[in-house]
Length: 89
Image (cartoon, rainbow, N blue to C red; front, side):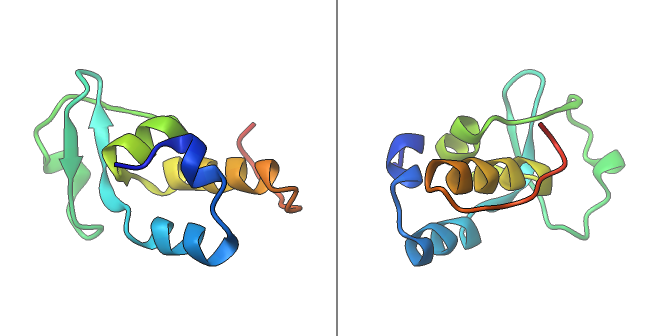
């Protein structure tokens, strides 16, 4: 199992290979992970409401939605002095 600290030290290729293998899905308010296909209808999943996952949770769970993964990418860029633009801050 990877840790956020280790993932943030990855070089560019290793980091984006890691990102490609993150499962699409979400964590609910009770902490349960729901792995789903991007074409599934979230409203019909029947789970607890979605909560944003921190970069640490995305790495630990190997699961996140696009904005969860985007925050992990932003943090990697910031840690590695890679200039990037972001919307959420």
